[in-house]
Structures are given as structure tokens and as C-alpha cells.
Length: 228
Image (cartoon, rainbow, N blue to C red):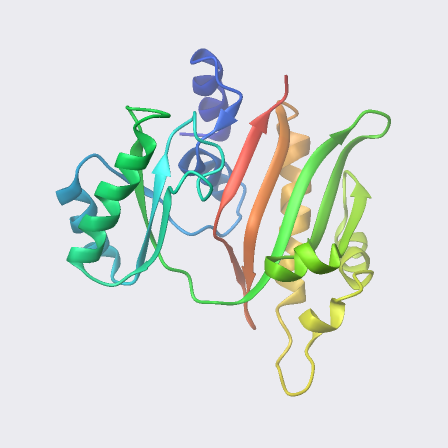
């Protein structure tokens, strides 16, 4: 299913917020590396998917009515066996029942740890779409270290955007810690810029966290909101 079809399907259902699997498919179609996300319609299917992917895995609630999955108790990380998957599956659906009795559960491989970065796009009432990049995880809350640019963003501007971060040294390497893949991160910003140009019906995009490695990166979670 192409990005336009995913957006159209959400519109037909009266939804502005895409579920994580839908948002990741839109990103994947744009060439963005994402952690794969597959839906489990039953506890047994969740176990089968986990064993197919290989442990450890992550389970998340899948519902258009539950935007903040973690706050709703809808995320279980680092599950390492069948018993843990079954327990997490039942717990997630139990907690989700009051908010959405039709909620499903997604199964994803647990991505290796990396440097955490946030990338997002939002609309400014005066300037139009603006792209943001910043340090993720705890540092995002403490330092509020982010950089903004108007769209579209070319590769050279994307690199300058990253270098303007106060915590850029955490990405560039320090005290024996090897550098993260700045080129891959700049590529991500350019691809997100291109996605927004190709699909003006996308109003907001939130990629958090983006895990950046010595080589390459992956988007672990994504939120996409259609324009009103």
C-alpha cells in the first residue's frame, strides 16, 4: 500500500492520527529505515511473531484512540521469552480495554541501543512547515537542545542544522566514544523533507526515538498526524 492509500484509508475512517504501523509504512515507502511492526490478533500470534523475529521483542498497543502508548501502560520492552510475551500481551489489552475495547497489539524486535535523537515536523502559523532535530531520551528533557529549519531542507543545510546543536559533540564522538552516523542522520532529515513536500496532507510528524549507530540509524517509534 502506497503512502497516499494509507492516508486516504485513514481519512475514510474519519481519523487524523495514523497508528504506528501505518506511520512506519509511510516512512518506509519514503526510504526511511524503521523498526518493523507487525500486528498480532491473538496471544498465540504474538508469540509466533516474537519467535519469528527473535528475542528480545517489544509489544505495543495499537489503537487510533490511544495516542500516548506509554502513559496508557501500552508498551512492554525487552521481552525475552514466550511467558513474558503472553503476560505482556494480556496486560496491554487489559489496560487498553477501557479506552478502546477493539485495540490490537503490535510486535516489534527490540532495537539495539544507540544515540537517541528526535526528529519532527510541525506547522508554523506564519512560516509554514518547520522541521526539528534534537537530542533524545533524558537529555531532551534536561537540555531542550533542538534545532529548527523551514522546509524544504537540502543536505548541506541538514548538516548545519545538526552541527548547531549544543550537544553535537555527543553525536560527533567524545572521550573514546565513536561518532554516530551524522551522514545517515542528515539523510533522514532530507528524506523527511521530501516526504512532506510530496504529501502536503501530512500535518505533523514525530520520530522519537531515532536510534543512531556508528553506521546507519533506525526509527523506533513514529507518530503521524494529518492536516486538519
